[in-house]
Image (cartoon, helix red, strand yellow):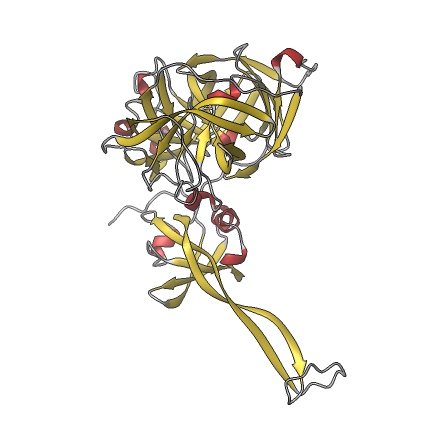
Length: 451
């Protein structure tokens, strides 16, 4: 059984491809027909609580992964892994294989669902760490092992997952729903759809990938007519694969169709062919369908019956936007911040003055460690580059708001605003505070030709 995994963060991205032997335990819901699990939705990615051998962790829920992968375990020294052996994994990028451990007979608990005999793969490469990209601790990814044992409902609006025992589940009549037949390769679900590129309508076979924050990935193929439309694209860093960085083109396609559902002016990424050679080995695969599209639906996965049901939610008509600043931001460590605690009136002896007679005002401060939001990439010819921003600059404030008082994704949201929107940053560089401002630009704006 081949294990092939992709995550794209910011787009987050991680692809594994490795051989596994079959045989694992099953998840059960003792004494229950259904269980509800609340999740965090960050950059279109689902983060759920997972308990492994008594230790509480956070995992990405990813239909593109066949075995649980554990990483970022430096702060979980109490975690006991059972029956380990060494293996090597290969994924996206041009680098070498990565050393990992395969561990058997582990206890997993997700909500009230338990599995007493789960294989887990442990990767120690410190570069494989989604915490800086999402701004919250993430320790691993899980997919097929959970989906195969339940009928799984995902409500992206209420941020709730329902795990339903198959034998107790009854489908409700839904006139506004569409049900799709899934095919499976290496325990991963594929769906057929249509992309409209220019004037051409093309049938495509796509991996359903809840572990990717993009809308669509399309594998360029001249014989199938899949190319970035009319050269209307820009080159970008797509993410880091297990075996190195992945770059490619970002573009727009006219429309994407799933039966009677039609989405217009959809974002599409076209990864470099050298980075996806392993993923393209799946017969007739043309790309991936991911979180930016899936979040527009309520989704029901029924792996045993090889089907998926979709119903539009309130996100359906949201516009597809790109980062118009050219900044890729991550949380890297912490910075010391001076914060005001309160202001009180005191007399000349330092005593509190309750008689409304102000003798002197004393401002009380405290120093604390706050997240440091660091620029890790600046896209060429972007507004950020033109304004002089550099890698390793730390964002101190954005449009007058202190960065450390915002979540990482709230800061990034400013970079996806309307064309022409002014962005004012205070950044820290080499211990100095520098003011920078720029306007967001259309990422597809045609470049002026030199004279």
